[in-house]
Image (cartoon, rainbow, N blue to C red):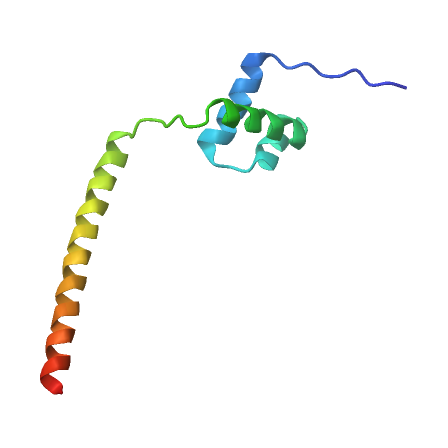
Length: 96
């Protein structure tokens, strides 16, 4: 008794891969939802990642705003650290 092999259209494969990439959910969960083999979907995702390696999606407006906030916070924390380092050195010298 032989089973016929299911064929998937390129569009179906692309949509399934996009679900994995965009949702951040595990391949196993999406494969189960779609009723396909986890290994099959995993190989589609791996192929997509190889062909799209090095490509980055442009940042959304909210991502850009968040990045600016984090950069500002990083600058402030570096300044605080530098100040505390100098203050520690000053008081260590004075205490000797």
